[in-house]
Length: 231
Image 1 (cartoon, helix red, strand yellow):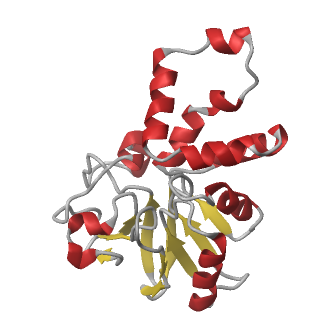
Image 2 (cartoon, helix red, strand yellow; image 1 turned 180 degrees about the vertical axis):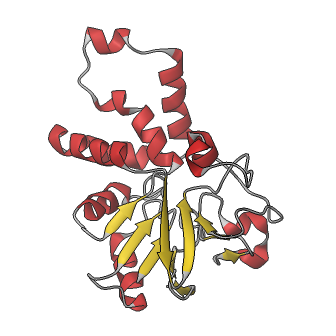
C-alpha cells in the first residue's frame, strides 16, 4: 500500500505514529511526505531524523525545506570568509524563512552536532521535487504545491522549482486527465471553512494539506483505494 501525507510542520512525531497505526501502516507499505515537515511546530527536525531512518518513507521537497537549504550559511562556522560571502539575497532568504516560522527549526538544528546537521542538509539536497507512482490501477503525480503554469502539453521535467514548491491552485484548476496530482502547501481551510481540516478531492487533483501548521492535524491518504485517515 502507498500512503501520502503533507505539511506536518513540526507536528508531534508520536501523533504521526498514532495516525500511521490507525491506518494500518506496516513495514511493507510506503509513505510519501509531500514537503514542509519543518517550521512552525517544535518537532520538525525530530520528524526529519525519524524519516531519515525509515527505509519505506520518502520526502518530497517542500518550500520550507527549500528555505532551510537557502539559509544553510546560518549554521556554518563564522569566519571572515563566510561573512564576506553574505549577500543581500542570502539575508533576504533568511528573513523570509524566519517570517514563515523557521525559528523552531533553527533552534533545533543549533542543538545538534555539526555532523548531524550535515546529514540532514544532505538528505534535503537529495530529496526529489516530485514522484510518479501507481497504486490501485491509478497513476499519481506527487508534488508539494501542485503545478504552477500548468499546460497539458508540458512535461513534468519542464516545471521549475517555484512552480512545484510555491504554487497555489484555484478550485477550478484542472491538471492532467490521466494522472491524479496529489499535493499540499495550501491549507484546505484557505478555500473555505467547509474544507477546514479535510482533504479536497477534485477530478484531477487532491490537496491533503489539512492545516497541521495551524490549528488542525495532518491526515493520511491511501492511494490504493483513496481512503482518508484522520486523527
